[in-house]
Amino acid sequence: MTKYEYATVPLLSHATKQILDTWGSDGWELVTVIPAPGGEQLVAYMKREIA
Image 1 (tube, one colour):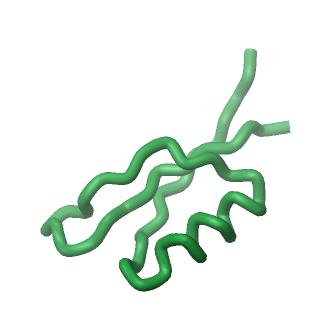
Image 2 (cartoon, rainbow, N blue to C red):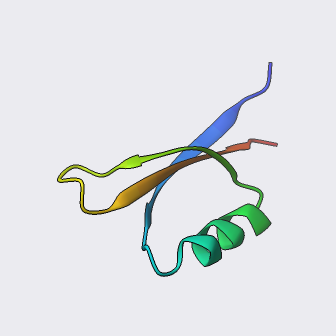
């Protein structure tokens, strides 16, 4: 069975691509993006397989 670890990442509107590219280059896959509590910021949920 595949096992994963997860991370929540706050996204800055002016650097979203850079943030996601950085996490992606470290092996993280984007699962979803939702508004943070308060709705002023977005939060990305990431996962990657545990070796």
